[in-house]
Image (cartoon, rainbow, N blue to C red; front, side, top):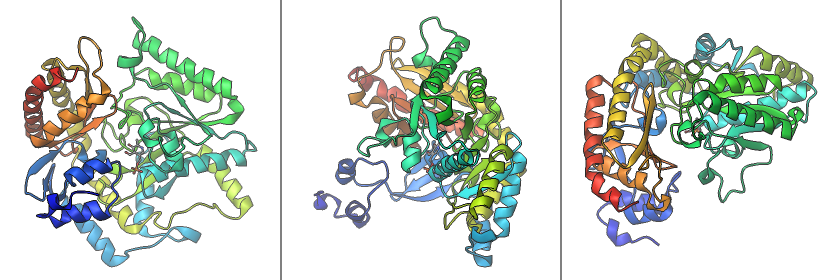
Length: 462
Ligand SMILES: Cc1ncc(COP(=O)(O)O)c(C=O)c1O
């Protein structure tokens, strides 16, 4: 039982502790410290209920790319609510916002695509993609071809199937996951996983050949698809070598294994192009997208499928009488309208050009933190996503029990920037894409002060 006395002055704290089971939260810490209640947003800033202002250096959960007070998005939501607050996409029904958004996504997709399916979250998009892949293979008379390969440290969500694809123990421990159809292959983490004197090219060759061995061991007739984030986000902002995806893709094509690009974080400008697939030379059969699709103002996600995948799905559905999949809120008109507006703003305000222009400064400031901190071993970034990794004397790791990254992220937050500690003692950076040069400097000036003050503490955490 939590200490009620401690929170007597703030009834919201007590209510939250008493009634709300939080996502990804340590329950005892919540009971001991209470929640952090945010109450207002303005551009790249958010304010908590004490009035303290923070730069949201993670865009919430890698998602609010257009910031926290975009009036055009709010107006779009309110107009659509007045016009048609809800409709569904079952039995051939739909509403105009979903039609326009589907057309737009096909127009901007990284490779020629055929159809868009709408869901409500990244997890649901990935679950839907798996079901479609199974449906597709059944339609092709390949009922055994069901196994899905993802990567260790990959993050694909938390529903039963998506959590199984996720290659992070914290999403699986205690849930008896992963489910039996999932296999995990190596992470393209050159900094930590490369052998001594191995070039990036050789490293990519090794990973592609390990993937091929896994497919052969399982039997190619049982392997349906490979899911990958262009840049692995929650697993530690792991940026693959340029040669990685082309080599992996060759292996997948050889064994008739579909490639699903999970663009839930990378999609819509994050890496400096519209899609991570463009930045990393990926030619996906299916793309899943969410988050910045609507700048997170309302929940919506998309599964974008190629004609190669759609054709058999259509034939099978004709045979069975229906494509038997659908969420009540699929293609929700208000969510679709705000997503379309977010995409329009991306174009009208040249958001990707902003990302491209600021990525050099962003990368220099991240590198600078590393150069000035003996307790950091690596820094990396692409577009406006990056990370620093804790370690010393080359790549010696701190004892994970000391949670050095989490401790440092806490100090950074006290200094006015919200960031996130990731597994492997990594701190990620993922500011809203509307950030300006001056604000990047403001953000890193605050972070620099926090890292400096952390220097002494780090010595005791070795
Ligand atoms: C790459 C990736 N895929 C899927 C998901 C799951 O999305 P959601 O939390 O909307 O279910 C996330 C969430 O962070 C993600 O980063």
